[in-house]
Image 1 (spheres, chains in turn orange, blue):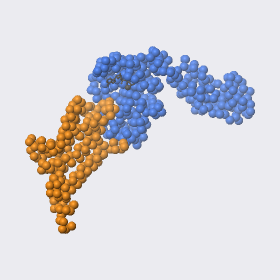
Image 2: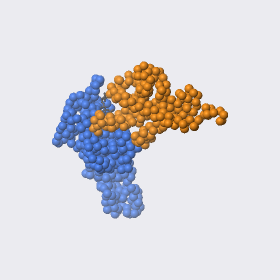
Image 3: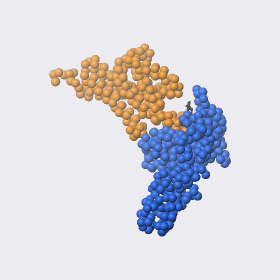
Image 4: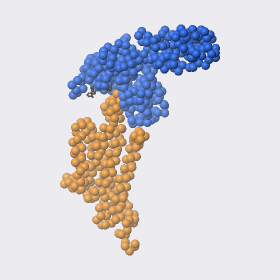
Length: 221
Length: 367
Ligand SMILES: Nc1ncnc2c1ncn2[C@@H]1O[C@H](COP(=O)(O)OP(=O)(O)OP(=O)(O)O)[C@@H](O)[C@H]1O
Ligand SMILES: [Mg+2]
């Protein structure tokens, strides 16, 4: 084993120990790229969903455009954005955000639509104003579906962030790209395992949040 | 109705956009203070539309609606609705709120403090017959009947003078429905709200309505009167057909036993001699004898047994069904056809009051 040297070892724990600071930096980068993209995605989606709910006819074109964005391969989108914004974080965030829109908008609209007519009629009958009804009835009742959308969007984004390594970013994707270039397995594994772990942790986090925010839906099961 | 009506509809019309026929053509209806009016008619005749125009969930195309003398159109819709209790067929409890929060909806909207809301909710839970432990539950954790009760409690919460109910007991099974109907009947007797109650169950309309309005397609009133009158004198073929068969039975259900119609019948005290007992049976043309002990009803014995022992030592059989003085002629009829002796026996606290047979029931309805 000693003779073969560190490169042949599947996991080089020494390397991990020496690079712990860099791993922390990349964790932060991965998380912030995900959070900023999903956050901006949520804000844009909210605005578009409100438009779609208010003017129903606009829902089809909105899903059409966001659906088109969703189908563009991520590498191609990063490349397409280079002449416009350059090779930087802005490029990454724009691309990542555009992938979240379809999922979040669909779930926002589906969530609001899932509120039973009888509940809306009862709310009207009790004397809720339109605005109060939206915020106190429709939004809370749609919350499980909305959070489910954020959950999928977040997990997807965690995966896509690794691709931004081609822009010199990438979070854990940086390790994967470097490892592939140098055939250094430890680096590849660190990138892959941490990326999957981050997605899993966020996934569970959203699940916990969804349950905490809608105890009524959980007890109903 | 004496005094100003609580709800007045004047030439109200509703044409839904894109529809060629009016859902409600030209409806005028006065509903008195404290009165429960049932709206009934075939599916699509405009009952729900009429009801929803009263709280402006649906805006009338033309006409005027007054509530307690005020033009409903002159009040912002959400404020108007806070003073009108509303129960819909699908119940529409808010799934994300506990039963207590659901019931306290309107008090919270109009800004009561929490202590007062809690007190009121506890009171209502009691009034509608829910367990206090259900207050902390979510709607999905209640049975259909319990949800209906919560729906009624929610409508009553801020003590609105007016209550609109759209087939409120439609979603529960017939047995629970019957119970809810009778409970609501008692409740209405105590609370004296002005109620507009939509139903397509004729018996429900008859039981709950001080007056009932029978509507035809287009919201045309075919007849608007007290149930007794409508059953006795249907204004049109439509009404007659709508009331369906068993109109006589339905009328009987509304008529209380008249004590003046009671006969004494072949009932004798246990001290009576066998000879006298035979004479009584012969006089009434029956082969059985009712036995009383100092006015208390003991039961009946077969005529053949009268000579075997003194009446006091006989073992009388009980009447399976007995009525009290509050019973209706319909239950009297039921007692007649169920009983071996073909009579309905009326007992008040164990004391024999008299009996009815088929003939006296038939007389009761023709009076
Ligand atoms: N929102 C609407 N848009 C168009 N037409 C409607 C609407 N609501 C009701 N209608 C029509 O108006 C008429 C009366 O409907 P309404 O719901 O008042 O009937 P209903 O008497 O309550 O019937 P049911 O016993 O079936 O509940 C029907 O022909 C119905 O199709
Ligand atoms: Mg209806």
